[in-house]
Image (cartoon, rainbow, N blue to C red; front, side, top):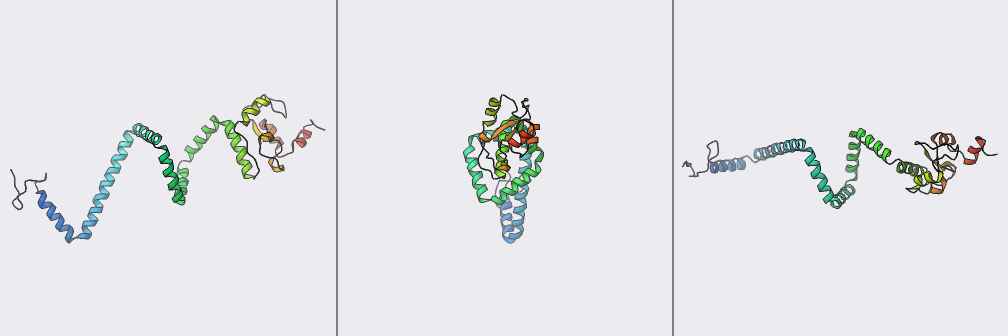
Length: 218
C-alpha cells in the first residue's frame, strides 16, 4: 500500500497527491495570504453557483411540463402560505414590487393583451358591467351595477332595443338612461341595453330629448 513519506497517510488524490499534506499546505497558504484566499474562495463559490444555475436551466428546459406540474401542485398545496408571504413582501417592499410589476408588464405586453382579449370574449357580460362601474368611478358617480344585471335586462327586454325595436345584436351597449354627465346614478334601475348605433347617437343626451329628436315624443 502506498504511504506518504512525510505524514504516513495512505489517502491520495487521483493525481497522486497526499490529501493530508495538501490540506496542511492549503491551510498554511490561507493563513499567509488571507486576501488572496478570500478572493479565491469567492471565485470558487461563484463558479459553483454558475454551474448550478446552468444545470438548473438545462433541467428545467428538458423537463418543462414536469416542472410546471410540480409548481402547480406546490401552489395548490401552499396557496394560503404563498399569498400571505406575497402580501407581506408587497407591504414591506412597495417600490420594489411596483417596479417588478411595471417591468413584467412592459416585457409581456402581447401576453397581457391576448389574456385580456380571451377573458373579455369569455366573460363579455361581466366585462360590460365592469366597464360601466369603472367609468362611474372615474366620473365619481355614486352607485354600482350588480353582476347579473346584463342577463336580467336581456331577459326583460327580450333581446330588443327600446329605442328602435330592433334586435340588440352581439355588440349591444349598457346605457345609462339618465347619463352620468347629467347627474344620473350608476345603479341597476338607471341602465338599459341599446344597440351600439342607438347608444352612440344618444351619447350624453337626456332620454326625453333623444326620443324627441327621433320623432317619438312631442
